[in-house]
Length: 314
Image (tube, helix red, strand yellow):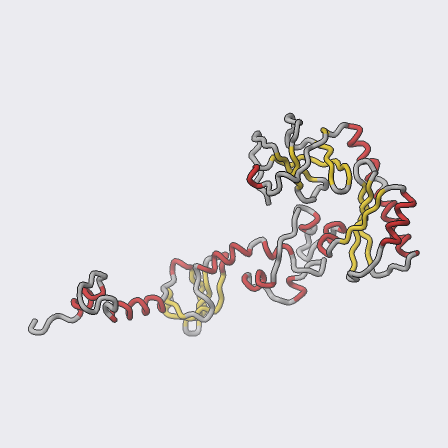
């Protein structure tokens, strides 16, 4: 994610969003030096002219492709805002028509989930999902072009994008993250669930989209960092209750569960004694100096050995 400037700071680059939870796209300010965050602007995109909102000014070093960026064409007018609402009101009818045309074409292994007009109605985008990567939807695309006399694009989206469009509630009982505040989908792996000690049952780690839950990434870094400071399961350590074996790690509590004889105790990190490390240091000290066998030792190991073994006759 690009670094945005603080309120009041400006730059020659801006981040524009076309949907409430859409990605942030970079554009140049151009000759419009009176722009501020929150303004609506008209910009040229690969899908024609679009109306978007300036979310923030972007630091130049965070913009990777300066040459390919287009400049803002103009500020949006009240008429532009009204026209956008008019075309948005027609999107549901376009989606219904798309599904009807797909049915006539005999397309059964695709789900058409969203229709979106550009702000002036010159471009219609249909989002659909399918497991059949060879599915041909050009017949539906041509039919919609004839009906609405506008340029039509068929956009294949993934299961997470479908869940974002459909909305609804997650397994936690609150509205889905993807449809409330997430603007990008982070890479998620099964390792994240393992690090957090979460059951690997599909019901526990799979979201409504059929993919790994987005929330698995939220606390992953905190777990990894916390576990670096704690002993692993099975390790023998010293505790205020005596010597015991670690049977569970609780990273966010900064503690471990230790079995001492027939009892289990929760021991916090500052109370732990690393017995194995202490034993290793003790053996190393008793071994003496291995680097200066011919004398001239200044590392302290030989001195400690000499103190332990006094000269004969004393």
